[in-house]
Length: 222
Ligand SMILES: [Zn+2]
Image (cartoon, rainbow, N blue to C red; front, side, top):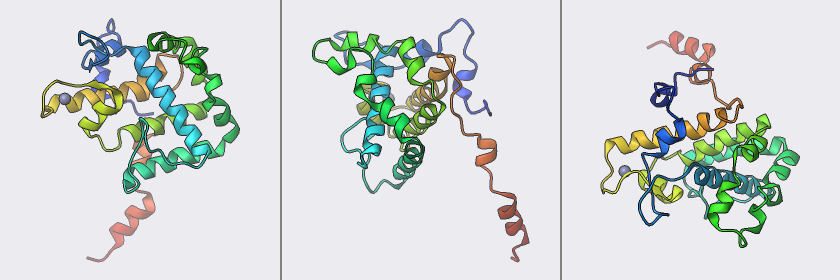
């Protein structure tokens, strides 16, 4: 698998924690004094969204008002949604089980009784390791992350995640870098830190045209 894609986070110092390194670039509105969002908050948001997407696909619905919502004429997002569908529809029983709210952390089905902080804490390493233990779940998660970042609109990303890359309007060029780092973290490092192997598309193969296509191109008479 090609690791060269993870450019922004590959030179991180060994004593530095990747999650801290990434999250300190963002400001959460959740606290009275602005602070970076917490890792548990991010995991909680992402896993709940991922589970919701599974339930929507199983029920044959298209997302309208969630973390991963997109408009029906957004063809790029639709393409990624289709890839996600393929993975989920190949293993309906596994995903039915995995997307069940009862199979969430103990507190997830009883949101009213606990404050959000308590729920976030229960998305701990043990829960996450179990959640991502199946390879198929990690594959679907990979497409889920692609879906969230398909259009890379910074304003939309801030709204989706409920934290900001900066206070200013307009956004600056390094805002893009911040969100790219977050994507890399979610896609790769968040799984790696659970001692699991992240699903990665080998771009050195999939990004190149086939031999036949190249040959056809070379043989064309100009
Ligand atoms: Zn910004």
